[in-house]
Length: 193
Image: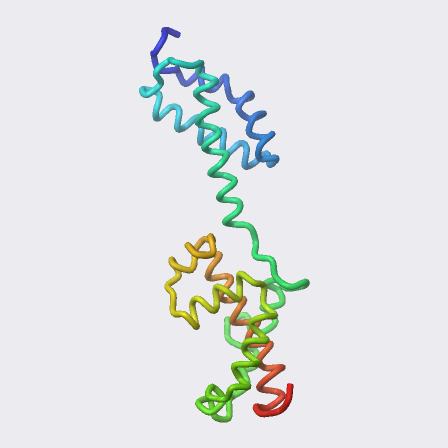
């Protein structure tokens, strides 16, 4: 290949095994490595005219691949499942709902919501329940419901994706509901807890 001329698709494809080995060492997940290599080769084909020939094709591809690997690691970190208390998973939450999405048993009715919200003990119970949640989940709930922040602000502060934020908020609400039913509503407001 002449110096500075764009690499051919066939020449790029010949580098695939080497790129895959390199990506596997970094990502340790064959599927993620194959995706990163595929994205690298696609970016190289799309940007072939920008190849200046100041390095070998392999070196140029490794440079692109490094960026794709970093993107893959960031994506995996964003999509990592939220860790909750032991045994806390979606199946636990499904126990509250019928197949049509409605509550199996309606939440306990508040005798007088305005009075309950005004009582200092309710907020003490809420605080204890918030403390029982995983830290990020409690923070997301507090930012959204107590501070009034928008979803994008919460995501930026906690370094999470939008979908992750919605899952955290859902889990926080379900966890708080279960906790408050046990420590406040079923115990009865005003009782020592």
